[in-house]
Image (cartoon, rainbow over all chains, first blue to last red; front, top):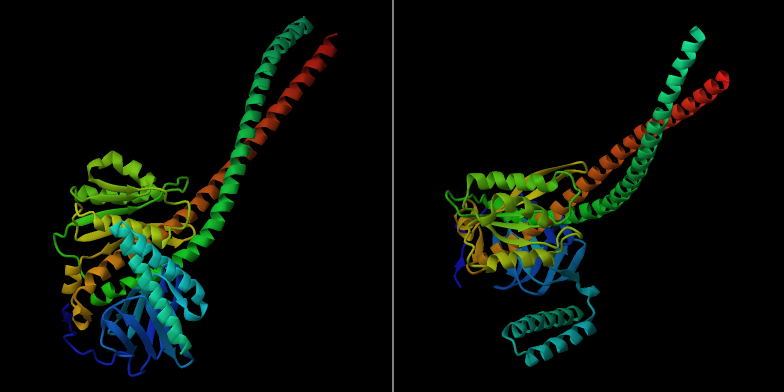
Amino acid sequence: MRRAYASEAAAAPSGGSGKLIVNFALPHQTVLKKHEVNQVDMSAVSGDLGVLADHVPTIEQLKPGVLDIISDAGSTKYFVSGGFAIMNPNSVLNINAVEAFKLEDIDSQAVSAGLAESQRLHSAAKDEKVREAAAVEIELYEALQAALAGKSK
Amino acid sequence: MLARSAITARSATLVFSVAGQTRNMATLKEIQTRLKSVTNISKITASMKMIASTKTTRAQRAMNVARAYGQVSNDLIKQAEVEKAAGAKELLITVSSDKGLCGGIHSSLSRYSRKHLAENNEVPVVILGDKAKVQLQRAYPENIRYSFNQLGSTIPTYDESSIIASTILNDKSIEFDNAKLVYNRFVSAISFETDAIECYPVSQIVEAPNFKAYEYQEDVLENLNEFLFANSLHWALVEGHAAEMAAKRTAMENATKNAGDMINRLTLQYNRGRQAVITNELIDIITGASAL
């Protein structure tokens, strides 16, 4: 898995204001639009990372996990199902996810029930596609459980 | 002498007016039937306009969200200044729907598509919606690779857009570099414009002038591009739906107004006819009475 590196360093495009501008969009809801924040922590396929203003432009695929938006007002944690986060040279971070919910809106009992069901489906599956779909569900539920456990810490 | 000729003249008019009376009666019944049918039509179009109005407000709200989602997703393409390669293989996707009575929505889309196909005969076409399929099947039947229906009655969901995108991408027999999504852009509640969203291949994104500034894991680009394709398709579907609802509302409003005008005209005609019949009957009675 080769990593391509940025060839040139971007000059401080946020004009030294030090603010990260976030656009966080879902197909059915625009969560954040041109919102100024300090930092965004996310769980990417290549690893967890935190993005600050003037971060090097990067393209990250998000895996199911927690997206933490940290601003002067505090931190808001969302669980995202997956998507992409792209940091641009002009200090704009674009996040597209298919589903996202605030951690406080997620019911841990429903998660445990869902995980048990997916594990049952996975072991009982005869079809390869069904087994793969169940594996994806298991990954999602396990990530949800980890996220909820992390919140209560 | 004069009186006798006057009497014969009057009896002639008597016969004439009897025939005229039967003619007027037949016309009156015709006008009444027409009046009843046009009134029914205007009731239907008025209720369709109300339904389209409520659908438009909802569709517009969904469109603003989907547009923001699509534009955020495509921001990379804009910032990196990705360009289309010369001689790129194209795929045309016409984003229409199954429902009619919406003014020029579908004909505008098929006109744009036909114009593009006239200049590029070999381009494969995917049609979303039966209305455009009917029109394009006549002109370019061999170019059509897929057609989807069951679209247009509700606001398109991301599920539907993903399914359509996966079907197209998984079919390896359709080779394309660029995809052109032809859809109707919502300009205002009373106007729309047929436009296209361009989707580029990974090779062009990597070649883009400002793309060197970005860091990424190599295998992520293919996933990003497929995601981008589904997002752009979702944007086109939802905005197209909003434009269609607005156009349907305008079309039904015009239809109701025209039906109203026709009702007024027919009512006047009916009343004049009725009054003419009464006047003739009176004349008959009076001349009959004075002849006695």
